[in-house]
Image 1 (cartoon, rainbow, N blue to C red):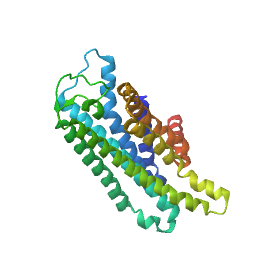
Image 2 (image 1 turned 180 degrees about the vertical axis):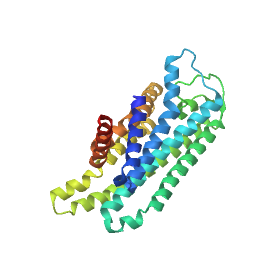
Image 3 (image 1 turned 135 degrees about the vertical axis):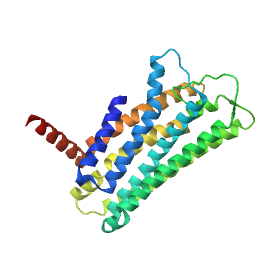
Image 4 (image 1 turned 180 degrees about the horizontal axis):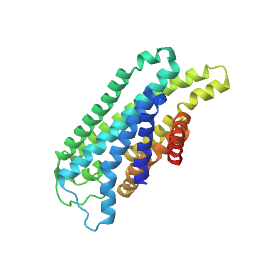
Length: 282
């Protein structure tokens, strides 16, 4: 599954790079999303696989902090990219005549840079807040990685409860803020689609949003369950299971969804394979 995630996202990036017809803002954002998927997976999954195959499961303080920083950076970057992809669909459907002006190559590059910068700031902020706490007692992390909620369980001191609430508030606010703008974009998109007179036109227009909308549901569905579900007696075990699913399964699904649900990308991948096999057979 890990290798399929890497190969699937690399295939998407390679196809977008080779096909000049895909050199549009939507596919630029998709390429950036694939990069964030790969880096997020590389930051966490190899360590998890190594621990599964080893009897000596340990991680240094610095390595733990680095893993948390990179996982949060790429995770938040992923959320920000999904938000601007929603904005891209909004501009394309609601303001098609102004699309080239509003989504120029320079503007798209700025938006992607802002997503990466925002993700880095969020990752650094959460990591610094957590690792300024005092850790005492057990040094066993009941998780497959240096997950923030599992680490906060090991912290001690008067400020631990307030820091825990602060970290959860920061994460939830960032996620819900991105989700709010995505939902707002789709409210305007649906309103614009309903004004299209023909059923074929409505279906064709909405089909350009299906893959993005599916990824949003999967991504925010798992993230909201992890951070918003009520705590119970077995919450740590269920959190670990959900986080494992979110970390491994969501990046695994993304290339499948975009490859199958996006007709233009699927046709481009098929053309690339056809050209490759034709050149090998000749």
